[in-house]
Length: 385
Image 1 (spheres, helix red, strand yellow):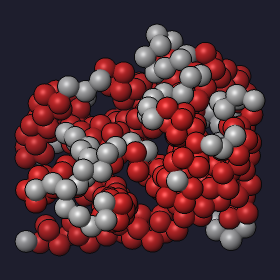
Image 2: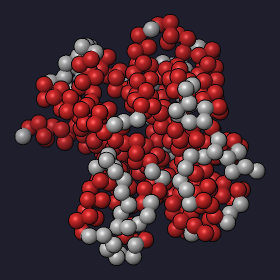
Image 3: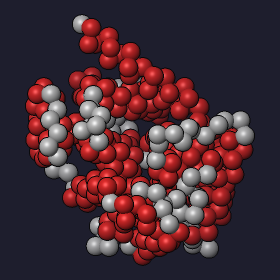
Image 4: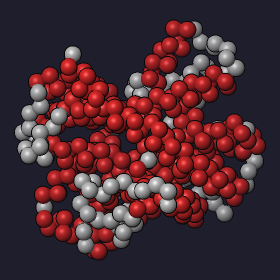
């Protein structure tokens, strides 16, 4: 059987759902009030799909030494398409705040502080584990000059915005996290450019935030972002604009709307070999616009299990690479892992699924939730100074 047979993904998805269903007996799903529940459910499946995307890449990497896209549209889009949808979620939610700011003004300090407290704690803990692993794997021996090592560390602490360098001479350091940190600078630049985006919609941020937004916009342009990711953010903003269309929202909430969204996702994930395919982003934008405005894919996105899985999607996204690396490189060793059959490789991945789900839930409760609760008091303390 091919290592990228669709049945492996289906089996993995069913396993993740079963583990989360068991967890849901002890943990309530997030409250539905004031939230877009279909997006809540979508998040978890996207993060889990990225995990399976990287599990497939590991199969080929162990045998070729090359970290590259899987050879089928489905397994490639599990990563690329899922991240594009994550970008759409981000832009939809925050552009919606801007569109609603005539009735409820945006507290820009609170917005930026909440993003920092939401993203940074888990990221820094994961990066700290990365540093410890590299220290262990390099046997505590300094391979670079202290100044060069400090520069490498600084890049990682700055969310790998300008580089994700190898640490202390350890080759392909970024693979310890499956390379997922590349998407975080896009998220950060979007948040930081929001005052300028608000201005484009006739909404004025305070002068200091507006000037900061202009600075970060120029920095973002100089950074030379890839066009396909910008289109993904634009797709999320289009979905937010469509909220004002009663006809579109009525269609989105209908059974036909769920059918169209499902077909669009199937066409993209099944036939578009990469996110650069001409049809990929239009199909994803269509599907996401419907989901964001009420399509629940026949209840699959709004049931309690799906929404619970979505609650700790960020943890799944950041942590799964550590577990894949630990399984194949640390526990088995690359040579032994490369000798696994296709079935043995995927059985190893299936064995990791409960670990990914449970550890992600724990990190959500212990790191993400406390971080989110810290945002308001921290901002109040800064404003009193």
